[in-house]
Image (cartoon, rainbow, N blue to C red; front, side):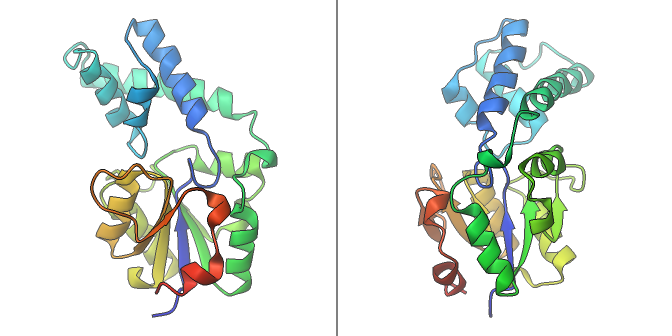
Length: 218
């Protein structure tokens, strides 16, 4: 099959908003008197908001401290902190190599989509001024199951009208790589800390993205 679509994760692939997620979780954790550091933050990559909060609670032996409703309220509070912080994003925050890579893909007739677990994906793309580079955006508001479930990547493939085998997913997290493979797509891993499934194409950074090399993998 020929390459018909590229499906990109957002955080850590198109831009690095990880620092804002970290700072927002850190602010909430400090308010609650919980321990939170960069090692715990690494465990949250590619994980949904509520599941991220569950990990923080587990690390603090506090899994039963809050009701389901209270957990939802606190996770949303973190999101409000995050939304305030990302307003400072500009096109200068697009990761190296992304714009020329997507531009070349589109010039070759390849559709592009975003598969992000963040409900703020559209706003981030607006701030980066690259919304028009994508034919479809799937976020947590559109899917019920978080990565590593394949739902979000399958949603993108279906929306674009292609078989998953004609698509390649680009991710920076292990959960995302598992999601891509479960969807039946090939994967490009950007600086992924591999704990289970190895990406089909391993890159150290987005600056190594090469359209012709990736196209020829299908």
